[in-house]
Amino acid sequence: MIGKKIRITATDLILLTGIGAAVVWLLYHTTVQAQYRWNWPAIPQYLLRLDAESGRWVPGLILQGVMVTLRLSIWATLLAMIIGTVMGLFRTSCSRYRRMIGTGYVELIRNIPVLVWIFIFYYFIGDRLLPAIGISRATLMDGGPLTGILRLLMAEPSRVPMFISGTVALAVYEGAYITEIIRAGIQSINKGQWEASSGLGFSRAQQLRHIIFPQALRRIMPPLAGQFISTIKDSAIVSVISIQELTFQGMELMAATFLTFEVWITILAIYFVLCLICSLLVERFEWHLKKETRAV
Image 1 (tube, one colour):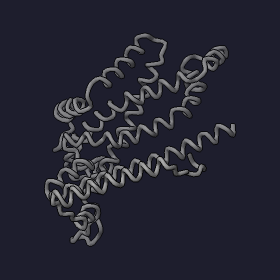
Image 2 (image 1 turned 30 degrees about the horizontal axis):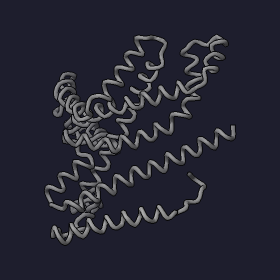
Image 3 (image 1 turned 135 degrees about the vertical axis):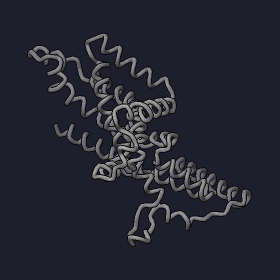
Image 4 (image 1 turned 180 degrees about the vertical axis):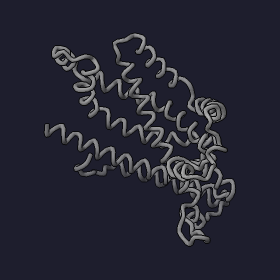
């Protein structure tokens, strides 16, 4: 919690000592017994490299993967927010038919492995749906202004169909969890709020818009922010359909250089830093929400 001093107890010291001993043991067995030759100086060039033609520093393979991971996570979260909000409203609707749709969606997603969803969306959207509506690799690679926009917001034009497939699949998966967050937020509002707004003549849509949802928003924002962190970690699964995000770049780099430990330790550290930054921002956001609530 922000503002509180961190106290280190004897238990913490024991745990830290145990973790340190495990790390030392692992490094010893990796270096000595497995005769692994560490080559950390080779890693920085895959983060940033000097382009010989332009003379400028450009992102290396790993940093390119980080950018694709962030784009994928942001787009998937935005789409999942739309899906989750609609299905969350369905889950709390007075209509039994809508509740069945919302419940069926959540139960379906939760009980099917995400890897299966990735392949379904890849083969359906990437290979069937996008070409059917006139979007294919050939139409994306026209060299016009659209190419630069796609490269900035998504991925290389030739890989946009795969990017869209992975984004939609990830959004549908994360949307099920956001649905439950929205549902819980709406149902957490006291029934007296519903009754009072109904007594004033508000329709259900007006109740949700003006009374219920503004109050629920304060409660659901922290878990929604936490769900974005989960999306960053879950995005690694789309590497199976050759989306060049961080995990995919790590596998390609490891296969080309055989720097197994250096590559994966670097990628682990990058994921940790990304998620830690988001966690600290979420924690600070929660602190501000609580501060504003107390002030009110």
